[in-house]
Image 1 (cartoon, rainbow, N blue to C red):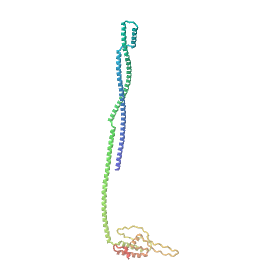
Image 2: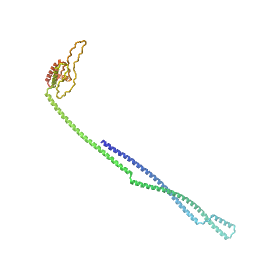
Image 3: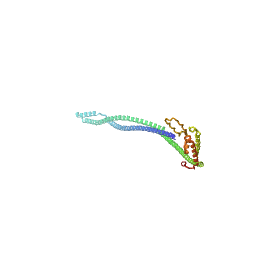
Image 4: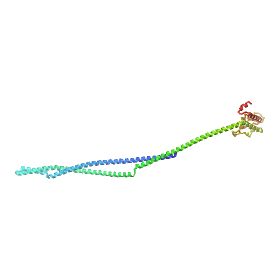
Amino acid sequence: MNDKCEAIDKEISGCFARMEELKIERQMISEGFRIERAARMEDMAARKALLERRNELTAEFSTGKSKASALRSELSQIREQISNLPHVQSGELEAKIMEAEEKIETESMSIKQERELNTKIKGWRDQLRQAKTVEPLLARRKVVEEELKLLQTSMDELKGKLNAVYEKLGAKKEKKEEKKEGEEEKKEREDPYQKINDEWKELQAKIDAKRQEKREVRNAYFEQRRQYNEFSSKNRRMRVARSVLERKQREAAELEQQRKEEEEMLKRHPFEKEMAVCDDLLVYLKGLQTKTTATPAAAKPAFQVPEGMTLLKREEEVLYAEEPKKKKKDRRERKQKKTAFTHDLGTLQSFAMVHLKAPVSEEEVQATVELVKARKAFFDALPRGADVVAELAKL
């Protein structure tokens, strides 16, 4: 379960890592769109500036055109006025008038001639008056023509500037249209956000599926664990019940066995064990009587193992021996040493069981045999439950 969950967590971590990459890609696309938007806004600002410049130049051109139209109208009027006036030089007329007046003053003329000459002077004066009227018109015509020429030059410059602005606007418009067509084709071809969103949805669905798989794995594991715990609990209860039943059966069997043993014990002599030990000791002592050497008995008495007990094997050890006497100085005679017996631990325990001492020499063997026989008779005569030590103290 842990391995499967770790593998699922690893796949989920991979999906989250890919989602982080998609976030970065989305941020990059958004940054690209932001840059494009900034560039587009910059182009729009530049186009707006060009449009404002175009409007300013158009307004100036319209103003210049209106002014030129007004100047042309004024020039046309001046030319029409000039064309209606006689083309006479004022200086010549003034000279003629002065000459005629001088002639009238200096020469003697008839009244008719003088009248005719005054009429001519009057006509010349009228012409002079008209000639003086033409001169301002001519001066004004010259000024208007110069202004019109300057205005035409300025309008030509404005027209050039307008053409340059229109060329820029046209280029930007064409570029914008091309870019718009490219964006439309690109948008029709593929949407970058759509691809990222689709992959994001796939990753999210995969994560949900893996989490569901993990939940199923955990639920299956806990279900198996629950079943195992139920089985273990049931098995444990069965074992406990079986052990209780077996213990009760064993206790009943032990009680039955104890009852049978007690019945058997009641049927047997209460001091049968001590009497058997006495028999074994008699056999052992008779074996000692047949030997003439002081060596310890090699053969061990064959003990009768009581029912329900196990005879343990023991190593023979010398537990009792007569301490050798020290030789006295300056004593020449050597006394013959007496032979001493050595008994093993089992034999000593048997003597202790019947409250007797083991013989240490050959002379004590016969007396010990009599004591063992008497002790056997003593045990045979004791009733069940009697205190052995108290009864021995009475002897």
